[in-house]
Every structure is written in C-alpha cells, then in structure tokens.
Length: 374
Image 1 (spheres, rainbow, N blue to C red):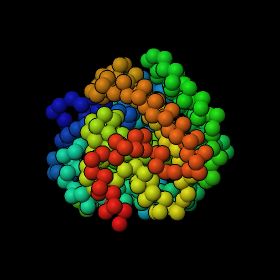
Image 2: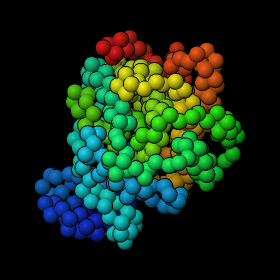
Image 3: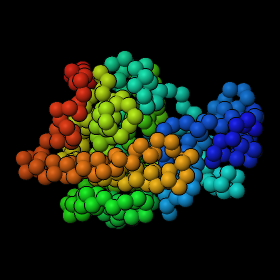
Image 4: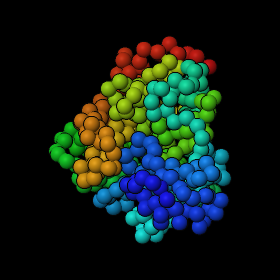
C-alpha cells in the first residue's frame, strides 16, 4: 500500500479494486495527486514494476448536486476512443462509494508535456509552440466534427438551446456557492440572457478547453485531451469562446493562471488561435464575442465555487484563496466582452474584439504570429 496517506484515496481498498481488474499491476501502488485542477481530483498511480495509470474522483467535502459526475466523464472518454479524437483509453469505472468515499474511474497515463509552467513550455522551441497552437485549434475542430449519434452520445442533445440551459444552471451555481454579493456578475448574467444568440448547430463540446487540459508531444502535436467534466452539447462557438478567454488569461502576467505560458515566443494571440479554428473547421465565427463574454462569466462562477469548496475543505486546493479576487475581475472582462460584441456587431464584426486588451494582451513576442500562421 501507499506509505503516505493521500486525501481522497483509501489506498488499500483502491489498490484491491484496481488489481482485481488489472491483474498486470504489481503492488504496492503509489498514489500521487497531480495537476492544478480545482474540481475533479486527478491522481497518478504507479505500481512496483514502473507501470502508471491515472485515477479521477470528485473533490472532497460537500459538492453541488449534478456536479463532478465522473461516470459521465468516463462515458465520454470511452465513446470518443473510436472517433479519432485524442483521448486516453479508459480502464474501469467504480461506482461503489464504499471503496474510497466517492465514485472514480481509471484511465491510461499518456506521456507528454502539459504546459502549466513557463519552464515546461520552454521545452518546446518557438516553432514547437506554434505547432502546438495550431494543433490545439485543429483538435477542437476535430472534436466538433464528431457525430453524436454515431458515438452513442445522442442523448446529450437537448431541445432547449445550450445558452438558455447554461445561463440557468450557472446562475443556480452562483447562488449556491457565492461567498458575497457581486452585482456586476449578476448584471452580466442579465445582459447575456437578454442577448441570447440563435444556435446554428449542435456538437459535442469539451466545456473546459484550454492549454492545461492538453497533453502535447515533443513536436507540439496533441497526444491527449483531458478533463471532460463540463462536457455537453451545443453551439461550437461556446468552446471557441472559452478557448479564447482562457488563452487571454494565459498570456496575461496578472491573469487567472500562475504563469503566463502563452505569452512565450511562438504562441499566437487569441484572435489568431480563433482564426486557426475557423480554417480547420470551415465555420463562420460571427458572434464569437458573445461566447467570449459567456466564458468569462462562467469561469468567474467556477472560481467562486472553487473558493467555496476550499473554505469548506482546504485540502481541495492550496491556491484557491489567492484565486478569489479574480472573480470580480473576470466579471468585468465579461462585461467588456459583451459591450465589445455590441460594438462589433454595429461595425460589421471583427475578431480583434475578442482580445480583452488588444495593445497589451498579445505580450512582447507578438512578432512570432506571422510564422505561426504559416
């Protein structure tokens, strides 16, 4: 068994469950929490022979109803293996909460780079970073090409539009998790509800699409797309808007993430990432500003929920307290994006408005963008 207690893992019972189903594993198993995610928890599992796999379970403490459904995440990954989308192979699902206090699933460990730090990103040369950005955009386009019915995920479709469902859901999440009143966030929710776009198509959405949820190869290619907890179905621009919002944050030294990884030379600004998606998918990105605004608003609510869980149980994430001030800032960015969308529509539309601060967000290495587009 593990020599060190790991919160969220009953090592003897989980070891027994895993080795009964994966007889090639050699105990003792070592469990190590990995990643910087503040929602479903991820653990690397190493056996005595050097084999590795990954385990995912919900966060510790009280969680909101319908949130953190690892069985659903397992189902999505299993369905996508036959579609050509780069995802890890699933190895088993445990819905017996007596094993370790919550459901969990196991999947293969995919070797590669996850660029959560500047040091990790510097392992790629600038041309490799450019390749990675293109691959991230193309992978999202590939995901959006999946036939939901053929993949066995047809029941993800809903008669009601994605945005109306999501606005209702995330307003409930805000009311359930908020730690103080934040009128600007409420106002943005009302603006988004008043300006809901017509949704032109329904595709499988990742729901949390950003650089930290991608495993890259040494050449910058995408080896695996991780963290499907928020996956749903709806307008593809919902994922694109979130990709843009997170990319802006990843290029900002004062952004949501600890290090501005995407400001390194070779990584493009968010507008070029969106353009790459448009080329790969063949989709028109008119109206994208609305989805960028929605993404900032949703991320703000997610961060508030992370902070609430941290207050209830600090073992859920050591940095959650420092993230809390970002909620108000993200609400402000959401409002800015809504207003930019209105101005863009009046002017005939321009993707440049998806950058929150066009003169500064691109960072000091914007000269790499021409090479990136090649």
